[in-house]
Image (cartoon, rainbow, N blue to C red; front, side):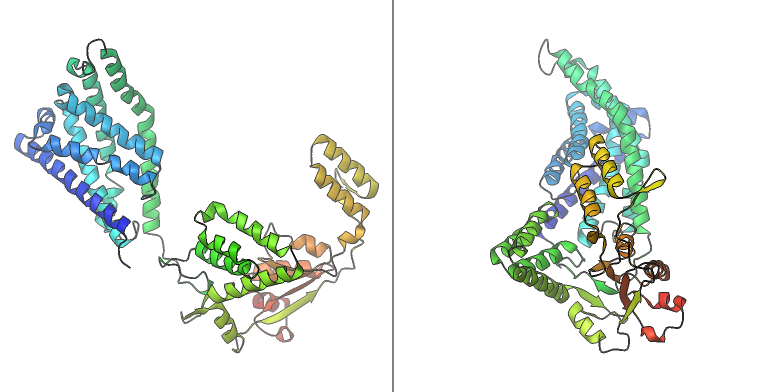
Length: 472
């Protein structure tokens, strides 16, 4: 895949910034080499030939990073980026406008700290854009520097910035920038930054430490096992995102009854927050007639079978439809298991345990009225409970069928359905403990469970074998 225009621009931007900061770093280090490491040499770094001009250009260019965050070129939070860049610009302003601030040791410490952080940071961004993976594919030395140098250079940089602000606050020429009588405004403006830094510095360092831990954990995490079985289809970027798949299936479903609504689904730009209205439109179309409901369901399922993929044990990929067609002719095809509960039919009396007793009939209805009055439950919830008391037939689901995907879910309705004698078609993973629980519950109920098996049920000799052969 080629590099997009946006990524090309970001690569160019980061290369230029990296080169600029590299020049600042080399000029500062050369000053220390020539004059030796001392407070005096640190104080003279700002006077290195071309350093001040380069520093001004490259740090001012960082204002574009606020724009990048605001227009979505990068995923950085706009507010935090604005605060970070803004504090640097304020320090640069004090440095360029105050001779006292520029010629004290803290100025040199700040400049070197900034440059030593920014060179590997911008180089890391370039590598991340080119490789397409900021965590695993960037060169390890760059990765390590990006997430480690802050431990030393953030404290030294912050200390240097504080000395610049404090020195500028004592510089009569700096305070007089706005003219006579305006010294207090300049003083309070520049001294506000150390006040802000006091509570903000440590959280910023701790946040970077947390980011480092997360990044190293992700880089050295065990690679995920290769995809197998039913998988989401690949998108244009080579990932398996659900967004495009959901759009295509929903659009195909709605297109069976309304091409206009289907087109709106495909044109939805803010899918994460905008998909709900399209599902509402689909249900509205289905409710117009039983024929519409069936058309929508059939079209959506057909599209899902067409675009979902299936990866077999040999790593070969096919559409789910083709895979199911091929599997049905192989020896590893699934079979249907069935277990009928052994409990007698439910007595169809709604009982609610409450304070050591089971409430039913009028006693339950009276208590429900109290709960509604107290505000314990909503009025509509109370009405629904009393409706079940008055119509015991609601509690008999022996002629109803329910399909549960992930039947073993802790928050699922399996227990309730079994207690009401329902017929459940259950699908879940092939884990022994899942099916031991589900089938044990089913046997003790008055309902029934239908489920996938890897072998013919008639060949299974024990419950343990049944649990081991169930699921998919």
